[in-house]
Image (cartoon, rainbow, N blue to C red; front, top):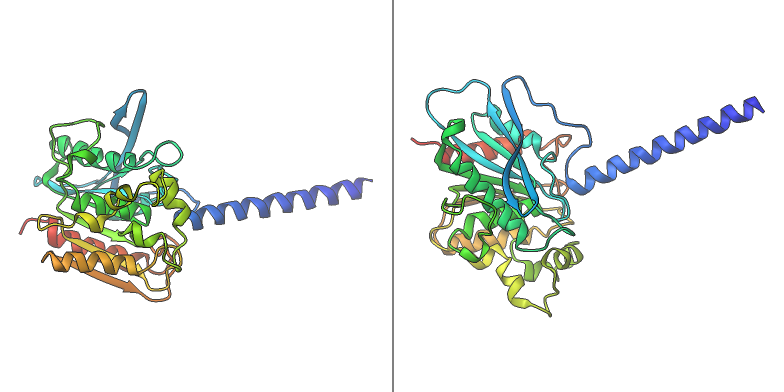
Length: 312
């Protein structure tokens, strides 16, 4: 009996361990990040759990990543927006990106935003705009240049970053999250694997986003086609939009690579600075910490931000 009990306990332990590992791997695949908490290097200072927007009793938080050693000159600030199919809005998933930016002499804020099922569009857009306003309003407090703000995101976070690039003139998307008299305009955006034209993305055979898009928008295209157009970055490209760097895997089976091409074409038509970097044989979330593309991708992002945010 004792031998049987030991064997049973061992089997149970192995089953639970495998299940736990599968859950961690599944979560990592869904969000594009690894399960292990990110630990910033000593060269990065983190100020955690700052309230940046309030809706009734609901506070939204951000973590601010800063270079530990800063000169007298203010530095650019970047809003970092994680993906997750508009279903996950915590601020930890892209901490490694914020830390990388802070190590490269930028200030970066990882933000949570209201996600499905808590809220539908345009809540997440309202929240990221509120994050830009907070960063600009508190720039002097943290040694940030309010005239040089950017945004970076991946997947659903890239969609929100792209919306920041092109919709600063749309008052209907501002929301009431705080700092109402401060501009939500950004000066540069990096969008990785971005859904850009939701109308075409919903029917693209290479996309897996149809159900996620309906949940995010709260209506099917047939029910409210104008809503789908309003939520699409390609609908709002104009001569004053922020320069954008697009990165996309040609093997992406979650968001069609065609989406980045469509946005690039709109930018080129408007005569705006844009660049599309295509990545061969990479998964959808190629920016993850365990991926071999991590450093190259973030180095490209840093170079782009230095070109468009750092005063010459």
